[in-house]
Length: 356
Ligand SMILES: [Ca+2]
Ligand SMILES: [Ca+2]
Image (cartoon, rainbow, N blue to C red):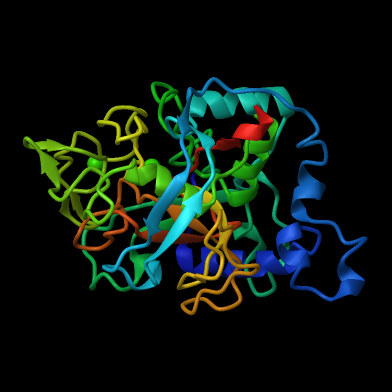
């Protein structure tokens, strides 16, 4: 029988993970120099060969001509100050990385994602070892909720959930080959990008691409109205969150990439479908000092979970709606703990022009 632990335990597990990652570049910056060598990371332990091979994926990439634009949104507290930023030319995947593409990467490299790796009970004091099994967080809507402030109500840590088994053991990718890959942690996305000869976008690049050269101050990446001619423009959530998804846009979960109309740069699903990892550390406001190809702060800080290492995610997901999460709207930001995959987070890649 599928084992399920609540997200509270999931969070306990995840809270411990950063303490382990002393060999990761992410964490080593925050640790004493004496620990900067000789202490391995989970990534090294569980997938020692990853990143050694290079390959290529099948994504069509769109050339984005650089320029100056207005980064941020006055509607969201952590997307400010709104300020001008200049971006160099770059290439970006026209759609989110799909299950088929990620499968090709895994087949070529033997890569094991964070969600698939064993957990060491010694690293999680106080947690029942029987619960410490590989898995990931799956959206599991309850029949009733008490308010929307506690997301533990609709997230479950599902043993065996991974990119290959999005809802856990028994679920497969059959028929979902062209859906975006999910249950990828930050390092999983970064490993894929490296293999493909690409990298993850900065959030400034991502937003520049999402704004598509138009609608600089618009509410949505496609304009100021939610629908166009009655048609949904993104895979988000309709109904009563989280209990009743009316699926007015046709999809309860992920949709095949390129189902919804592209933006001004012919990029698909820049709003909704799945959140997309960006390379910036998350902090709850912008540092406006660096206005040329900004790469974000040198460390992470989320006042809601101090001590957690979080990177930026962009675009919202199939779970976004105005009732709970408006972060599919233009300029909005999201954040994710780097070792916390879920079934609504994926990614796309970019490439520098000078590497062409
Ligand atoms: Ca939907
Ligand atoms: Ca997306």
